[in-house]
Length: 341
Image (cartoon, rainbow, N blue to C red; front, side, top):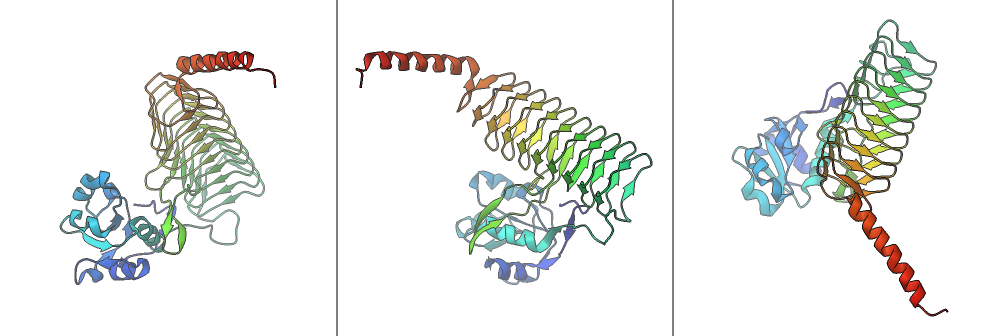
């Protein structure tokens, strides 16, 4: 369920309305009057939710879903459990996205005042000139917010935090002693798109960002809110400047990431992991505890705990160094053997 501090509910709506909106066909006569209030993924769906199914790897989750309705292709209608209404469509993900846009929208800063009357700023917090604070936001004692920073509706910032100038924070919960340097963007929508009836459409990003105690986020770094789940950074993790962390990423405690690191969506990173500059990780990869990813490495597969990886694609560091040395020698031999041009 989208956090009501950050997202406004626009429902409930009938399945008949969603079928008309998305072009889907109801599989059960008379089911058009069924009401739904929110979208949710299969595993999170409740009795007032509508979900979608497009990957047969998730058939077990579909069989156990509690959703009131589900967008599916015609070939998968038979997999929908009893009690869940099937809405048949060629593009389940697109139908889900359109339904999400109909049922939810992010809360916007309301009113003419830069600092909302509904915001709660504890005594001892310092708010610099030009700061905008949305309704329902909370800022703890001893925290400092730099000039021209935007704190969105419902955002919670703990105590003794330091928020730099020109920072943007939305859909986020921050613990104590969090430090965010100038220009960072926390909690904007992650990159989620799918093919729709008339072209590519955005998939609503309905999760949050959670930064636990002692996290540091460098200048101009971007941390996207979750698409379905939350994006979470564990205690005392330190992020350099110009890092991108995508939606649904889970970063453990005491991790470090150097500049230009890019973490794709739904990656899980264990405690104590380290990333060199310009390292990149593909989506849904699991990085074990204490792993080290060398500068410029490209990780496409799961990494074992305490492994040291390098190269593109990433491989054990010693193997990569041996292969680089071999290629260097082979190239030198080739140059000696080739006649002068």
